[in-house]
Image 1 (cartoon, rainbow, N blue to C red):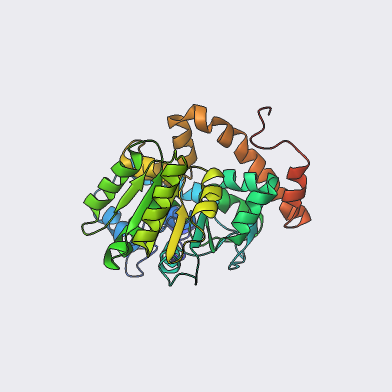
Image 2: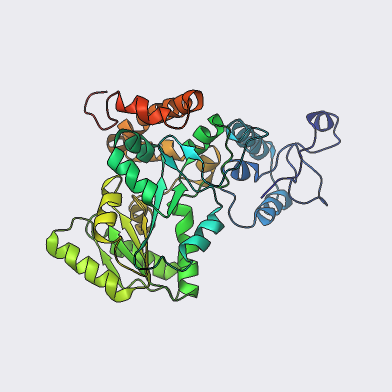
Length: 350
């Protein structure tokens, strides 16, 4: 979605335009900022934004609420693509080419006819995954062979901005899954969930079925599988094809596991989804929208799981931006070359 041009700050100061107003409806008073501007600029412009904007503007709101909108909008403008940024279909960011598509476009591609004789492989990449790929040629090769690579998180958007690229959407699994469930229900395509601790995938499935009547989730499994468990999973996937299989084991294990055990099964689409089941099972709450509009969902997650995520975010995020800066200076392979000369992001020593 593209916003209408903002009112000038001078018109706001002269009282000719509201500070917070519409930038989706030309019939309404134009504002310097819009209540939905952060969502558009940060690539989380899902749903009916004109309706969301109208809902805010039509209901009473005070100075504090408007101030919050302004702060979020101005911070989002700092993270937004520069004027003149290009929109390539598959830009190279640090260690992989990503598909520069909207979240709706991702759903269309996931439910398109599967490739002949094999699975369709879909991976989300975030800074941690691309850091790993920059140090691990085998993992990078798996990402290169995937059918779809989805840019997940504000870190990808910041890196893209550094490279002069505008990404359409932040296509993260948490926002994508409800759309997948709606499409799977409408097309009678079952979902299979594999991953997480004992009971997490089944709890996630129960929650999805409650929120999407008619959705079928005929098989779930935890992610700690021995040979017999793997055989059961493979048998179930083959029995329920065509289906969509979600694998949540964390990177890079989930991608390697999916390629080894599922990639050769025809008529299925496989998505590797990290800790997605934890959110939808209710085990871990997702950040409020205001945190996402500030581009700080990662900080919310760090507060929840500091031991597990501290190293990934506090060391990994600066490393990722460093690799992006080197790519900007020296070309698309520079991040890989430089990373291979230094310590791995999973090395026990900083």
